[in-house]
Image (cartoon, rainbow, N blue to C red; front, side, top):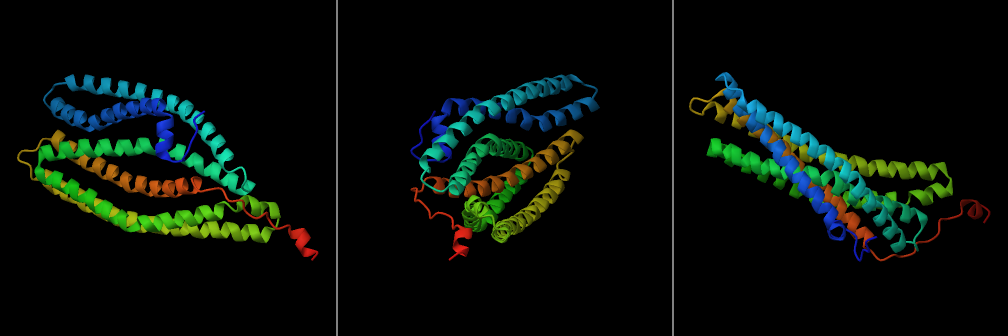
Length: 298
């Protein structure tokens, strides 16, 4: 079992570096194969028009290799990250055993989110980064204007998120503060307090959702402009082949989707940053929950 001086993504990665390096290697191979598919399909389209079927064999090989690696990685991840969750939960309980059961329960649940990010969301971030790099290289190889438009889209997305980062951090902190009170409130067995608690959670969830809607609404406008511009630019290529047009449009859309994953990942990291600070805080015993029955007799 790993011992943690501090809780967070980097300490977990350092404690289980061999397990995580293996899964990262499989993620990179998997996503390089995924990123190559539109290019291979585009080449196959042009060759099929000319009566050549050789590229279909390459496509079949890539798909077979992708299936094997994807299935193997998911089977490995379930076992590796399951072990990390068990160890981390045990360490969190030891760190905060002096606190109320409510806070201990909440922080063990929060610690699992760190591992969930490494298992589920970090691979999506790897996918996004690889697709962005491959997409940019492919698009700029067809026309420099396509590459410039790609950079402009990413910069616009990052600017949008930078304005909302602080808001997301504060809203997630408020939600976590309220969630840590849940077990104590349940122990009081008063329906009024429970409903009030759940309504407060709902309020913070609504505020987080509304902020997300505004940020991603602006980002989708940028994506629409990007796709429209690339459609016009692809039509202006001298003597464009169907496979070339397909490749440009596929990588433009893939680039947009990958770019959208970056703000999502950054938003999740804002939440994980707040969780890490909470887990690394010094334990301070809290007051015991009020005995409602006893207080009513006063």
